[in-house]
Amino acid sequence: MRSMHGIHKALPYLLATAALGLTACQLLPGLGAAPTPMPSPAPLLEPTATPPPSTPEPTLPSPQVTPAAAVAEGEIVFVRGGNLWAIGADGSNERQLTAYAPNTVLRDLTPSPDGRRLALTLDGHALAVYDFAEGQISVLDMANDALIAAPVWLPEGDAIVYQRVPLNPQTSAPAAGEVWMAALDALPRLLIGAGALPEDPQAAFAPAFALSGNRLLVTALSSSEQTPVRFLIADLSSGVLAPFSVPELETPAVWDVSPDGTKALLYEQAAPHVLYLADLNAEGNVVTIAQISPPDGRAYRMARFAPDGVRLMALRAPLPESGEGVEALLLTPAEDGAYTATVLNQDVGFNHLMVRWHGEDGVILQRMSTDGGDAELWLAPLDGSAGTFLTAGEQPVVVGG
Image (cartoon, rainbow, N blue to C red; front, side):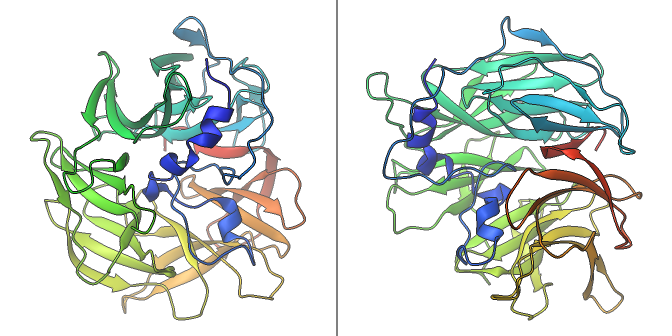
């Protein structure tokens, strides 16, 4: 198994997973205006010129299926100390679910469409699925010679597409990222590999969102550093790649796609503070688009649809020199087509990093003090009233959606 040094060397290639959000640092005041799309909900370290010190060899589960505690609908699963934990929405029954080594790196926590399973990556070298009811974790793909990231469930919930970045066996240098698919009952197979774009044969690919009609929204990171990330629509039946067409935006990028696949939340890579809502046609392309963030000079990011496909959740960066932290918002459409913003669990001095829907009783927030410290998980009511502290942890996922 390769050391975590290989992951740091390959970070520029993993950045091709552009659709799932930003690093936390890019939302914090004074740390850069333009977003770099990232593959996972958890913050990643920026690549540095000096290689990081070597770390212990990653520890992967053995055998291929390992036991884990069962969890019930409505509970919150999260990461702490290299392991998965769970807690009730009322703060009760907190417990450790797995028994990995403390230095295990768990990322990309992605619930299945029905909320009964969880895809995740282990140490950047394995794709696993946690069955909440059965209480077991199955490894679908494990690679000593590749990095694995950015899992996306297909709508039926029976297969996962993800990014694989091959590593040179002698130097650990990364090659271009590929898109693979692993079914729950079949071996992994390549979907989109090197050379899929004849005009840029070295482009790196990553999955972003599943669309209707056996289509997939993917990102392509050019081998040229001057070229922005491109979004493409992959037809999984024919293997054809087509541009994601948004005539109104020069370099469009996607925050989220609605549960029914008919709408998308977009931004312009050259001006990432503005939030757009778009209607999609059956082929996955934009039919209409409208700006829904107000012209207030604030940056609206990490936007996501609520399960009803109508309400939205987002993070809002503070104005420069305001001294405020990053806010978590609920955006509700009004009769005039505008959106009303409700600040959730408002508390100056904290940066909110993640928002997860927890039914009509509220959302689960991950936040951190502007002075640093541990990440905290809170349950915040939808009306903007004070929230309830649950525990310390990160990357929360709500069981059952």
